Length: 392
Image (cartoon, rainbow, N blue to C red; front, side, top):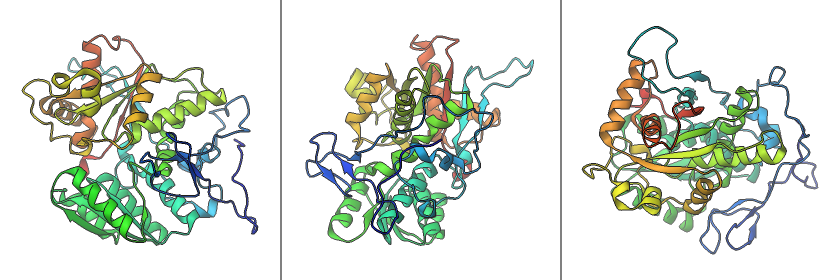
């Protein structure tokens, strides 16, 4: 691939790309949020890629997700890249190829995102976020996370030699707290809701000199999660599935897929976008509530699906972008109950996919989408499995 590159400084090194506000148009060299309150995005689109995608048979994937560097707004200088070899996760048939009669019946392809260095897809965003921090000369970062993003950011901060504070719910699992603390980061426990954790972190950002490495706000994080689309397309010889079903909290993987597939379509490497179908936790499903009403957001007995702790997000930072992604791809979002999540988790483990509970909402949602007729029985579907069962 041969894309454009960031402008160079007087010293000949690439200059970090600026950010712009999709709501009001204001531009910034760097900032975590616009003055108007909107999240920011990179003021950039890849160009000079060529009209044809690279031959998958000859594509050099030795640099992992950084093999797609020409499609990323960060990391023009390879020496800035903070990497642990992440990316190019397996894409495998979900159902066993055997004569057994107890097949799980997913009829889908699973993208095994739980085989990353820290055991979750959040490493996609961590590598690009810490790379952006290195480009900007940052030496201290803060982040807020229920677990996986915090562990990823802490680990990549350690790789970069940067100090890190990770604000976490007081009830965060010990395994995720250990991952944060053993990487040398400080875990700041906050009592209260997930939203109150974010509020405490933002207060620290605004009153101090740390850089906000937010997986919800920082556009560099979405540069990393966009690579899930690049990989899916490459692994399928530059074809796209009918749909991708994704857990949906803050929308980091959902929106990354949207951003990535959009860039591939604009480059002419794919001819359409797959439908993006979200899976939210029953009782904490703001996208579902907005689209389908309160009853749909809390199906059954209305109990919160606290098994899916990784997507307990009542107020997503990128809600307007999530709405755009759903509308532009003819997508949707549904709420998944705790009981459906636990049943699907058992099926995953029995089929050899050792995942954590949150990612079980996506294959559970796949069943429901097919039951409702949103997806046909033979529709071609990819489901990312987002986190390792070793984290529980």
